[in-house]
Image (tube, rainbow, N blue to C red; front, side):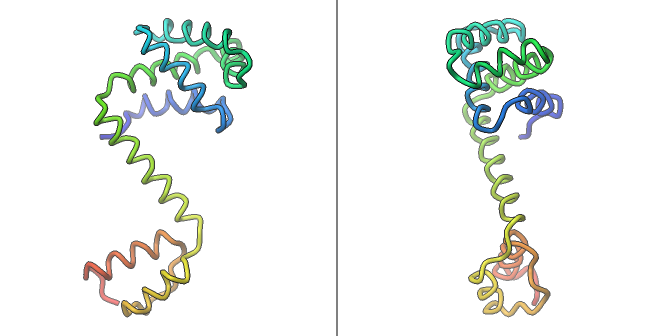
Length: 152
């Protein structure tokens, strides 16, 4: 299961207005609205903005209120994503979370060179090809060699 492209775009449109350290709080304003019974994007935004007014000491609340003036469509996009998210079963949510975590780990591995342990293990497995460019490539080579899919 993946996130439909229009929903993914809506989520990214909304989140792009918030620094990383404010994104969870901003998202929670929308989710709280749905959990309180809002079921239309405009209702979700209205409830979230009311909550943001009461919690104005939070930076995410200030950004959310500012966003309502600068890019209301982005707020509605966030509400559409939140409504979609809350319509999922707990199992579906967990599956999506795990997929995002796996993608984040792979992005991190791609940005880092292979470890000495990976290189030593590749050598013990008989690998004699070019040095892997990053940890992800090394990990995949190791998996292939251990499973016997690839011949050194």
